[in-house]
Image (cartoon, rainbow, N blue to C red; front, side, top):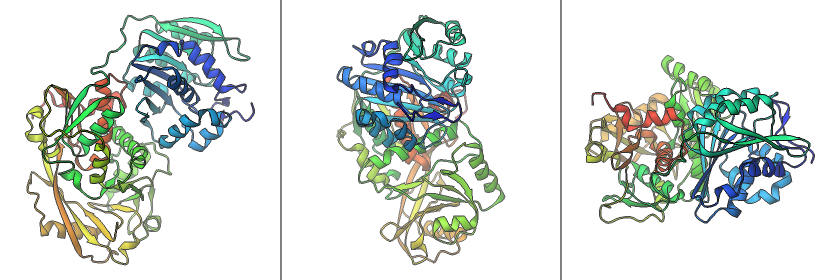
Length: 568
């Protein structure tokens, strides 16, 4: 075959120039005794070093689809330091375009933006791909799960030695059990020695094509294969039908559980019932476990929301104004330290910001090209479609507590340092100048582009206030903040308002994880549109026994146990 894709970083091909798909079958499937090894198993997990074009994943998916039992589920976890663009993936896989089309089209439809960290995709309620963008030596220690078979595919060791290190082999061992197998195209001596030192038996086998040898083997440890907390088909009660609860129900179904929604107030009765919500990550000057969570959640929303119909999802970008030295320091460092491509996040001067916005912006700004807006109310309804709604409180089944503003008083969540925050948004009729606004703008509040001739302007932030009646003074405050940030905007007439309560934790970070009797997903604050979806996947992963959709540091940061031993 010609035009085999080649890595610029390592001057090496991504797969055999003879036949990459046949190489995958010989080295990685046959080398791990697949598909026989997944027969009779409800779940199977493959770990891979070096995602590249995704060829190994697609061929494994194809084999699983054709040979695995009905109802079985495949997890595929892969790391990649230099992610390819979708167009390059399609070009590289063109020789198998027809054969792999059913899988390639689905994969590329959800392929993540180039943002460091964890990215989870679910296909057909049967296959989950967890892609981790970053150096294998740094990201493998963050992965939590139990791997059944390893595909070691990180370019020729002499050209990419960082993929074949003691750290990589040690982390493979940590994630393996007594029946875990591995296979790799290389037979390099130091790879063989490194795997043996990490606890694997290693044997040479006939290589593919012109390669005389390859390596395969099994982990020598005594650790048993991980068992799920709950089996597929388990009924799970989801308390709360706002964003967090509806997202949990939607995601649990993807992994084969049977959720039941319960909310005496109906779907999206609280803050989740707002007609418009903006989709942005929460910013921090440095890359931390918190920022990794929001980055992963933002990227997931950008993949999933376009697949849902009737939500009003619209990508228009966002400008976050840099109005003082403190914001300049924070937002500039965000752009520098988060590691996002400049096409996704960059600082724009006032002239460029004005051009992007379509209106005069008197400040530089942090620009996020993939920011968007959506109707939280419609999103909740899309999530909940097909999920049974219980008339009475479900009993006798595991529970997810996603009760929103009811969290501080809920007996299942007693002891967590939670409080409510009141917020009021204002709806303002668009005028000539404001109607030209093409992107959302954030300052001490925010304004969204007009939808049906109406801007959403927000939001007040009133801790401890629990009255959800709208207040004239809050509308005035919202419009005053807008006028101060964008003096070019005309004075607009108010055509409506909505006040609601959100829940926040003491450290202003969501609370997601296991508690007595089930799970919790709360305290999502003003970023609940994105954080609730990622939280739902984490809860599902905990229920099914992993692998986790987030790194260990982020999981720990979200955990309700983080408050133990601290004064509440």
